[in-house]
Length: 248
Image 1 (cartoon, rainbow, N blue to C red):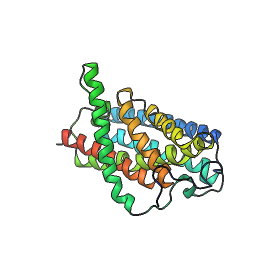
Image 2 (image 1 turned 135 degrees about the horizontal axis):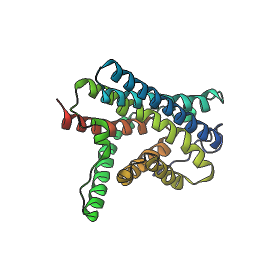
Image 3 (image 1 turned 90 degrees about the horizontal axis):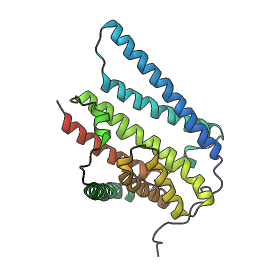
Image 4 (image 1 turned 30 degrees about the vertical axis):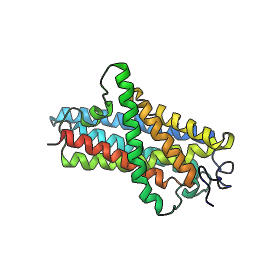
C-alpha cells in the first residue's frame, strides 16, 4: 500500500549535500553585490538617456533589472554548489518526477491561489481596508503595457524567477534545514523564510501559503520540478492579470 504524506527522504538529501550555511551566505552576498552593480548601470543608462534627449523606458529597465538580478542569483547558486563542490544539478532537486505531477500541478496551483486570495481578503476585511498588491504598480509603473512588455515580464517573472527561486529556496536551502529539523518543521521554516525574503508585508499570508505548498511538494517528490511548474503558473496568472488591466 502506498504511503500517504511525506515519504522518506533519499539518503543524499538530509545530511550529505556538500554545501553548507556559509555557501548560502556567499550566494546571497554575490547576488546583492550583483544587484548593486545592476542598479548603478541602470542609473548610468537613465542619465545617458537624459543627456542625449531620449525618453526613459522604465518598463524595459525594470524588466532588465529583474532578469539580470535573477541571472546573477543563478550564477551564484551554480558557483557555490555545482562548481564549488563538483556536484550536479540533481543534488539541487532537478530530478525527474512521475508524469502525474504535471497534471496535478495546475490543480494545486488553483487550490493555492484560492486559499491565498481567501486568506488575504479575510485579513483585509478584518483590517477594514481594501487589499492592494504593490507588485501591480511595481510591474506596470502606472503605464499601459504593450505586447513587448508582456513578453519581457513573462520571461522574467513567470519563467526565470520561478526557476531561480526554487533552486535557492527548495533546492539549496531546504536540504540544509533538513539536516537538523524534521520534515514538517523544515517545510514551515522554509515557507516563512520564502515569504519574509520577498519583503512585501501585505503579501506575507499569501506567500507563506505558497511557500508551504511548494516546499511540501519538494519534500514529497524529492524534486523541485513540480514546484517550479506551480510557481511559474502562479506568476503567469499574475502577469496576465496585470497585462489585462493595463493593456494598450
